[in-house]
Amino acid sequence: MLQMSIPSGDAPPRYHCLVITHTHERVERTLLGVGAQTIAPTSITLAADSDDPRIQGAVARAAQKIGRQIRLVLRAQCDNSRRAQNRNNAVRAIDADQLRPDDALIFLDGDCIPDPSACAAHLRTLENADVSLGFAIRLSETQTASLTVAHASQGRIAELLDGSQKRSAAACDRRTRKRILLRRFRLTKPHKPGILSGNFAVRYSLFQRVNGFDESFTGWGAEDDDIARRLYAAGAKPGSSMKTSIVYHQHHPPESQPDWSSNPNAARLSQQFETWATYGLSEPCPQPSPRVRILEPQRQKAHA
Image (cartoon, rainbow, N blue to C red):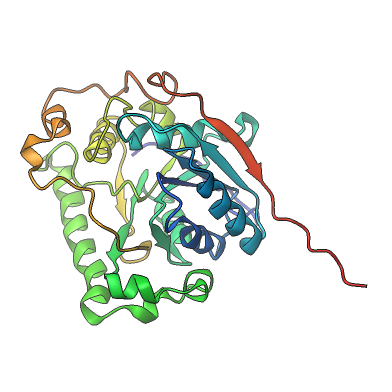
């Protein structure tokens, strides 16, 4: 396990919440969930794989409702989705003097609303591990349609779940802990236990050590498996937060490809790899220049 120092005393844990999206849909409710965390983030950044002006509107409304500054990164849409680059863009946008080596980076997808205890659970896991693996409960179309602002901002989404959804996190936690044990004996694939890129945490220094996400992965899938194998190759110890760090995935039409074997990312994942991403955090792939804006909550005018 890599040695990381943990803040002592009464200082609150430092972490940066990094949300990515390609659309204005669903992202406002996700940010309301970020604003409801039991431990407030040091910073909140949303990076968009698009410059749709409706995204800024959704983020501005969320900043107002949660009373927090949100850093917004907009980039003109490319010919193919670039989730890996978008996540690196979120990290690159944070002011250098605001990032410390031991700060935690918590990555979320814009369609995944975090439970109020999700980020605190990641921080607890990182006290004894280098990477914290979270879980996503998929909401049905009916459940997603029933979501209200109160559900997201007050941490009440669990009220909508059925019994099988409530049990799913524990089942996945058992599988993940088994894979963590097998990893100690080198009996797993290089990227197992897998990282859910829409809900995981890692120290900034470790993220730097592997040069972040590999930006040569474009389109759907495998960028999370790739960073998992590179983090583990760098000596990172995974820890399961499956039962305690939960996000609620809002229903929408699937983006995944039915035939995984035909996906070029699957072929790339089967090839030899280096721990350091050639195109990553410090050497990005060419892209339209990202624009960073700081959205502040507007002060309410006092009534006479």
